[in-house]
Image (tube, rainbow over all chains, first blue to last red; front, side, top):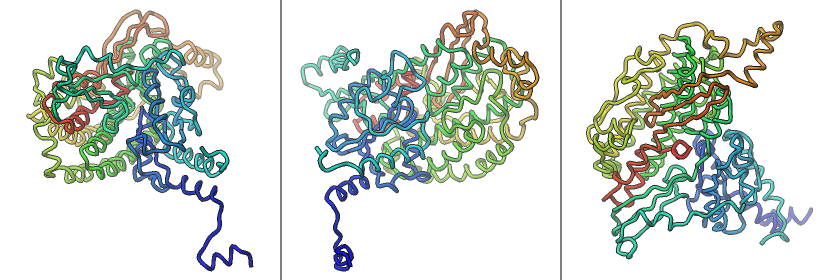
Length: 160
Length: 409
């Protein structure tokens, strides 16, 4: 009879603060409603009934960066858009995460030219890269779950 | 990243009136990050109270350099760029570009390929209209329709995936025909869709037609006349909603559209309501065209028999050295096109998609210019939104159906 079983019978669960906060963060992550190009259409498809990203507690896309904690950079980022994107990132409250969805956001994909930022990691720190042009909704969901795994491993000592 | 320069709000100051500079009217920025701008459009609204007195679109937030990139690629490889210009109409853009290359080089297309092209182009039109319907009704406040339209969109994407292996960026329609013949399951998949879809369109209509909120927010909003449309060069559902049955599929048929029997839906008022129902009726007409094309689809090759513009069949590569050389030269160097220029246009879901192509005698185009309907139709934003409320601007943007990737290229 360990302590967990006894407290469990009493209706109490013991855990660490770190684990509990990480669990809460992964299961109610609010992405920002921010579509740029083709990948945004697949992001919409991921929210639609067939793929239904709300299974992972993410159906609530916030239009304001101040209410969101995940930025999905869905599409190509032009040089004109780059300062806007950085400003949006700066407006998001901590803790915040960034997913670079698709080849363009990750490396600028097929467009190696003057107009595009060659990978969004030049302007904001990226947690998860998703390949594909555009990635399938399953690919996006896999990226989101990968991010969840990452968030679950975050340390109390690293919190800002 | 020192070459990234912040866009200043002062850059548009010369376009606003004196009253805004003195503070009598208010300047309001809408976008580039805004849920209802369908991408990254920025509108500078000059407001008198809640009434819009001027609307200045600021575009270029998605400028990708597609035209310049196409000049650096061979005629075959440049096609992948057209998918990404208007990402809701990839097969339509493939078709427009392929028709231009075929016109430049004089390549013939077999009838089976033409019928399949028509089927796929019409499926793409329905696909685009479905995404448009879901999102623009959501802008007006009805979010449930989005869930239904995206459900049917998946069926179309499954058909695209069946033929090309990709959901969105297909590059399936190639100069000289198609990439390959459609698989045997194609006809059944399209037939199932044709059976299902008319009932589903009625379902969408039942959700919005007769809804008082919807009618008040669309009828008499964003009115434009046929003359204004012609002055600005607007095409597609926007001009058809003013009562003019202008459709390139009838006016200047391509890919065998003249064989099919279909109507051009028009509405007389030129408002947001008309543009909604023109597109919904267009989906029904597209189903008619697909049904006829599927019935008439002949057997035969799907690529032109002009071997200069086509790679050798896979079966020859095993035993013919010439075929291997041809294959290598075709995919590395590409084919040479004459030193001429052509313009070819198709009717896309948003309007006239034109491709101007200039060859320089070599394997790469000297100049490619895409005439994109979103760019042209966006010009009507100021006259459509003048003297309406800020809330109506959202509905008007939705009703002209802009795709910023198509607009900024």
